[in-house]
Amino acid sequence: MLSLENTKHQYYPVNDYEEIDLRELILEIWANKWVICFITLAFILIAGIYSFFIADPVYQANVTIELSNLEGLYSNPANITRYLKSNSLSLPVMRALGYDYSEAGVQKYIANSLTVESSSNSRIIDIKLRNHDPQMARGILEGIVNALKVEAEREYELKIGKLQKDLAYIEMELEDIVKKIADINGEIELIASSSLDATEKSILTVSLIENLNIYVGQKNKLEEQKREIENKLLNYRPFRFLNETYVQDSPVAPRKLFNLAIAGVLGVFTGLFFVLMKNYLLGDRKSI
Image (cartoon, rainbow, N blue to C red; front, side, top):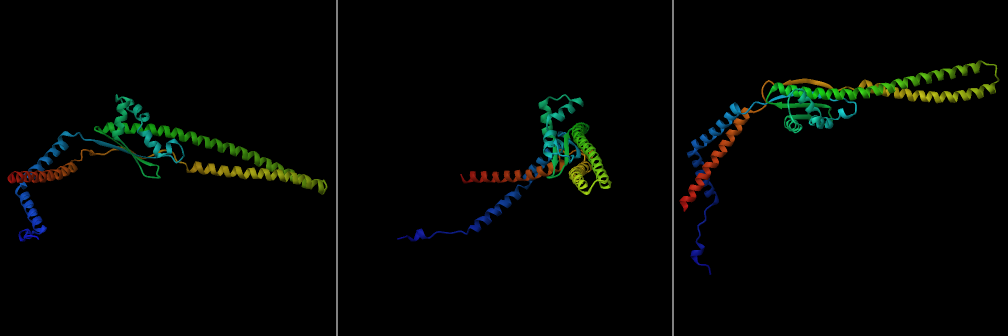
């Protein structure tokens, strides 16, 4: 049997404990509000000193380009992104501007400073380059995109030149076929007006008409090819700048107000953590 003493337990609602703990917690935080404020101000002060006096300002050069719609190496945004971040373009530009960088140094600088952005299914690309010197940022970015433009235009002119040669060849073939068709039509007219009997005229005319149909078919195909090439030449667009290279007036880093805000939030949380840990440790010592 259970004794009466064992059944006499005192039960306290959980909410009473939570209410007491929460009240004590709020009172403890309020009692140490100046400590929290001091820690927060210390964080903001450190962030302000770093952002306004220690950190070097970083400027950003921007340019927007549109790739050619003529299929090739320089019309694919993914290829252009990889090419811009390689040393093939940037290293000669850096050395031409008088910056003595090693290949590894240029690769590291471009990887950390150059940003290439393009939306899906678009040939428009935004290119950004950061540097502590705004003129250096502009000079490097201009050199890189100008070198890219030269190579893209070279490929474009080669392919357009090939299309123009194909068009000239087709036009020459068309002239020859049109002349042959005219000759055959002339022969048919001569046969029709000749003194030959009907059977001979029919035999000769049928043979000429067969040849005429062959040439007419060839002419139609060549005219279709000519229209396709002419449409391509009309619709193809070369590499071009949508926005010339420019540098933003104000630096993009450090973000001073953002740093101060982050420092304030971190300061508040650090102050709260300090107060709660102090209260916890002191509570443990009192219980001992």
